[in-house]
Length: 130
Image (cartoon, rainbow, N blue to C red; front, side, top):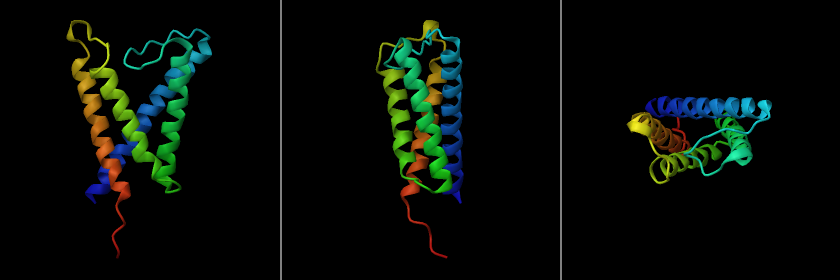
């Protein structure tokens, strides 16, 4: 029961994050001006926009495949990628927090990604026999 709650949290967290990034990249692509600025990611300009767009589609697809059971083993790897990108981008890059603003948000977002990753590992467990 607890595993299902954690998995539901992981699905929701990762899907909402991917959906937000998808919408952000679609708006940027539709505007024709690739001025998306996400300093915690390693890309810039048009490359950043297309990476965010592509990764968001992969993220939503991995959640859908895991929820439906079609290919659930992609999801834990996806959550690991998200966690690595967050830790690397927020804490081990040149990304800075002006006047300390946003640091707590970055920490909580990364903790949320860590919990989602740990919850996604429950997909590797064998289902209990009834």
